[in-house]
Image (tube, rainbow, N blue to C red; front, side):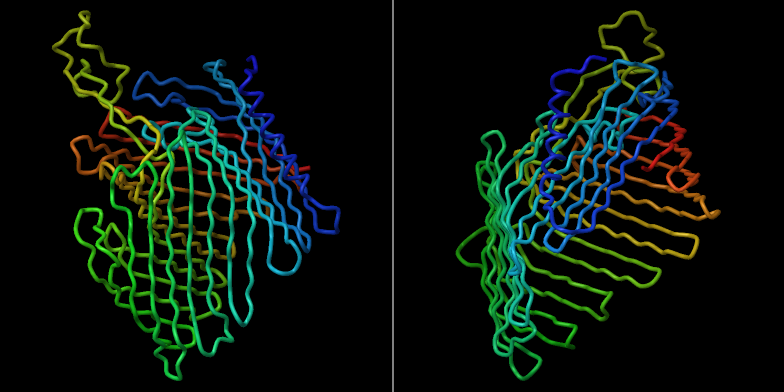
Length: 530
């Protein structure tokens, strides 16, 4: 097919991004790894257009070039993974296209005093509209290219007197469909006393973010400061100050501000376990997001490191939206790894904002409202109305995210690695509340995978996953989509540089709307390292 001007621009931008990253490598001694690869994929889909009926099968062929390189020296660390894929679709060659992805990071130390430069570049292909198909990939199509570039200056020092980790950066995000684009600055700082402190201790963290998109602006600021006195006992008094302000021309008068001061104490239960308790009073007469007066509250935080491989931190406080929690736990031993996280944050200019649209009334076959393709407009006069029912069909469209949204998200990843078998469990959930409309969207995904070596060069894996998305929960327009996927993969290393795999996958999607379908796939893939 003819290469359009936009495709040329994409290729040039990818090449420029790779060239800039490679150009940052100095001519000093370091460890260099460079692994180019090529891969060929043949995927047969029995329902490539993901239709409820009138299924169309297709053979999707993919040829890809992969570059995997890293460089590590005393002052510089750098890694880059790039992939360029061209896909052919047997059922419709007008869909033939190329796809690019990139993940790169660079960090350059500026001497030995803690200063460093950093940068990153990512190019990814995401679902154009997750309400239509959140599992969209090259085979199913309907993707959009998202690019993100970050560059900045950091300062990090750890010694017996103090610890500090800070950065300031500029970032820009560009998308193929122009939704979710943004650019702006951000700054972060975290500091605390070192192990040599004998009189005063402190903990402070702050963040600032200034972003813009199509003349819409958002400024998000958050800080927490604790300063206390070290005593001869295990109870150390401190003063706590918390401040948060989120503004710009997005909030339309919504209250997104918290400001309080309090006093408390740190209980050093053991050298590895600290617990902070404080009583805090709001400053001023600010109201919460529901219009009520903000009240006094107790804040609690815990830091525990029972072993060098186990860390736990948890906190509770109050912000403008009410109770606020944060939790992090990591544990690792010779065979088992567990990571659990929960956090709450404000976001804007994302690709997570959806608008309900009513497509209208259609005559659909009795008992089958799963596909709008089988339905007719009310004016249709060439159907037997005894076999049809009048149905109101709706959908969700992705729109600009020019609002503040409160995101409460958690994850749990666990891996058990036995000599020949590995078990992996993953659970993720997120609740997004639009602070303008107060509508809530929910996301949940879980997966379980078993991978076993069945020979010196062969591996067999089975993975079962489930995910669900709920839109505008509790409203008259609520919709729920469920995805169930089962995959069997066999991989064999033919020689030192050649790998072959076969993959069988079955996908079932059920929805309270019209997007119900099933799809089966068979994929053969061969990868050659150089």
